[in-house]
Image (cartoon, rainbow, N blue to C red; front, side, top):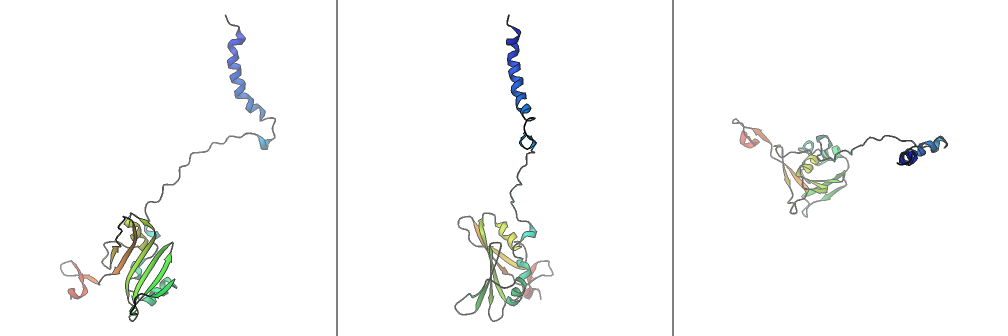
Length: 181
């Protein structure tokens, strides 16, 4: 038969190893005592996968139908107002916000807008990002949206041209104003 002290020895060793660290805290100053704080596990927010409607960069639909001078009044001074062609018929206004560049082509004589060109700082496979940044849709009759040829599958920019003014004819179809009369 084994002596009682040898059978209790493992329990005594286990108890002292668990109690000794906490006993030492009483002798230490409060600033050095060990304190245990429960920290809840916090998951990081999921990455943003879409651009919401309120976060557009340029509101292109509100610019359609304006002249170059009205655009300058609405958007402020452009980065550049440069000549767009050799024959002095066209100029380009250039604006930049949040890394996106907006190029606006207009006729010099009439000051009428011809085309918008939005360039993204981050090429994407999702065409919708560019549409959201310009606050445009594919189905609006006031303008026509075209992506530039991605070639590598990444969209970098879109072209937006004001469509002809359209109205609904007697049969309910959208037609140019000239055909409806």
